[in-house]
Structures are given as C-alpha cells and as structure tokens.
Image (cartoon, rainbow, N blue to C red):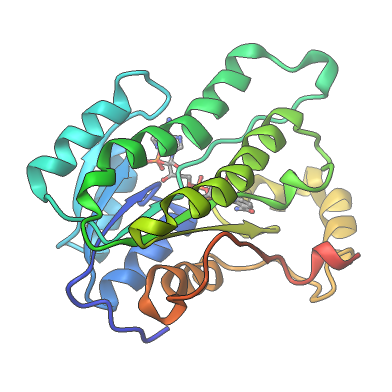
Amino acid sequence: MNIDLKGKIILLTGGSSGIGRASLVMLASGKAKIIAVGRSERHIEETLAIVPQAHFIKADLSKDSAPDYVIEEVLKYTGTLNGFLHSAGVIYCEPFETFRMNELREMAKVNVESGFRILQGLLPAFKNGGSVVFLSSIDAYYGGDPPSSGYSMTKSALIGLTKVLAFELGRSKIRVNSIVPGLIRTPMTENFWDDEFKRRREEFLNRIPLGRAGTPEEVANLVTFLLSDASSYISGNSIFIDGGYHTG
Ligand SMILES: NC(=O)c1ccc[n+]([C@@H]2O[C@H](COP(=O)([O-])OP(=O)(O)OC[C@H]3O[C@@H](n4cnc5c(N)ncnc54)[C@H](OP(=O)(O)O)[C@@H]3O)[C@@H](O)[C@H]2O)c1
C-alpha cells in the first residue's frame, strides 16, 4: 500500500515477526520512522536485514518490568509519537477444564497488559494526537479447534479496551482501533500446515468464504491505513480481516 507516512514516528510491539514485521516493512516503505519491540535476537536481526533504519528495543513483555523498560528506552530515543501498533502476542491452546494458570498469565501480560501499560506511559508523547491499533483475533468471537478460552479472553479484552480508549482519548485527537484477523499464515500458525493438522485445516479453510488463509501483508495493508491520516475519522472499531469467516 502506498501511503505517505513521512514525519510520523510509530512504535510497534511484535515488530520482529509475522504481522508486526510485515507492518514494519510497509510502514518504513511509507517513510515512517520506526521504533520496534522484539524478543528474539534472531528475529530482530532478520528484520533489521530488511529495514536497517528501524530502532529495535529487545524486551520480554511477559516480564513485569518490561513495559517500564520499553517506555524508558522509547523516551531516550524520541519525545514524540504519532502511532502505536500492539502486535506482540502469544497463544496457548488447552481445553478450559485444564487451562494452565502460568500460560493464562503469560498471555494476559503479553497480549493485553504490556500494550496497556506501554500506551499509558507514552501517552504524553502523543502531543499532536495519533493512532493506536491493537491486534485482536476472531478467537474473541468464536470457539476454535484446538480450543483456547484463555487466548480468547485476552483478545476480547482488546476489543473492550478499543472502545473505551477511543471514547476517552478522542478529545486528545488519538484514534483507537482493533484489527480482528482470521487465519493468517505466520510463524504463530505455521504448525497448522503440518500433516497432523490436515483434517482440521481443511475444515477450517472450508468455513472461510474466500477459501484461503490471509497473508501478513494483507493485514499490514490495514495496519498502514489505520495508522495513516487516510483513516482520520475512523475510531473505536474492531475490523475483521478474515476472508469473510465471521459471516458464517
Ligand atoms: N496469525 C494469525 O492467524 C493471527 C490471527 C489472529 C490474531 N493474531 C494476532 O496477531 C499478532 C501477531 O501474530 P503473528 O501471527 O504475527 O505471530 P508471530 O509471527 O508469532 O509474532 C508474534 C510477535 O509477538 C512477539 N512476542 C511474543 N511473545 C513475546 C514476549 N514475551 N515479549 C515480547 N514480544 C513477544 C514476537 O517476538 P519474537 O518473535 O521476537 O519472539 C513476535 O514479534 C498477535 O497478537 C496474534 O495474537 C494472529
């Protein structure tokens, strides 16, 4: 997508892989200045090989101290932000009856709390307003196979947060939206293409009106639109990008 983002400074979590990386590449090609959070050294290096000018902060967002560290590092680099994408996410699948609390807590911290705290701490940097995008999931609306009530809980929280923050921060000219992807082929979902998941995969793909998984670049198009001024009157929405899955 060709959108001019010159002069914009955008912070991304999850910028080292999948949807976050594809968004980073697209935003950088639109001339935005990028600050990104990643955890894996290898994934950060791979991303820097594509966009060497990106400024990476290495942090494990499941740790309590990480959001404050990220805020501090961002403020060392810039006092102004125009956009924030919270793409960092992790999924554990278990039946509800046996869901493990350590996995629930890790998802809550990475998927929700870290985005909440980083945005809260950096709010003063949005001096001229801005745009915030959270990565939710169709799992916030539909049961999945394999099941993940815990993941669904965290992704639903982002939808609620989107609405209330759009209301609360609108007066400061900050727009807040969520993206609700269906099945997107990234490292997070790559094992779904293993032979052992053949039957479940085919069933899932059959339920998608467009009959295929999405690509990280297709989601990055929507991210780029929402972080740009082309979407200047859009706030408080959670937008499906799922090949029509939610209509079935
Ligand atoms: N793929 C899908 O089908 C799909 C569907 C709906 C929603 N989503 C959501 O979309 C977002 C991006 O997912 P993806 O598919 O692009 O997955 P991905 O390729 O696995 O990327 C996940 C990103 O989150 C980061 N991350 C995970 N745990 C972290 C931690 N503890 N600390 C810091 N960073 C951490 C990873 O960093 P490192 O790589 O550096 O470890 C990576 O950059 C997630 O929020 C996911 O829930 C994905």
